[in-house]
Image 1: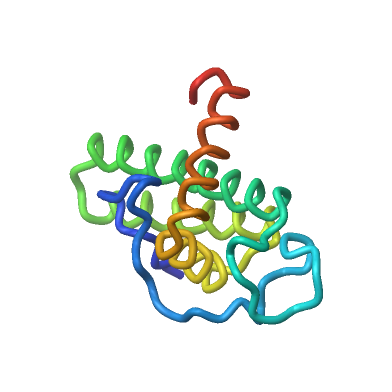
Image 2: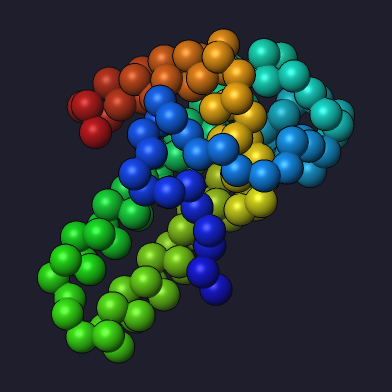
Length: 134
């Protein structure tokens, strides 16, 4: 299974514009309210933190993928490296309680809302500071 994630050339300051706009499937553990469409500005701090922690964890997997691909030159080995990275990304999403589709929707919503983007960037900066600048 190959997860389609935001293009790697984007930074948290320019999160990919992805597809759907609905939050109806957004996990209650993140949303903190009943399921349904919700303004990004109404997200709880816990929801924004969960999204940011997921983003950082997926970024680590992508960084490792790129390192391994730069050291791997045989097509079969490169496919295996990508397969393992896909599995790890799926594990990260499962650990965080977010489907790939919801992650894409949420990153789109953050990218489309200036206040949410600023809050997301601030949360990333705070979390990176807690982790020694990671």
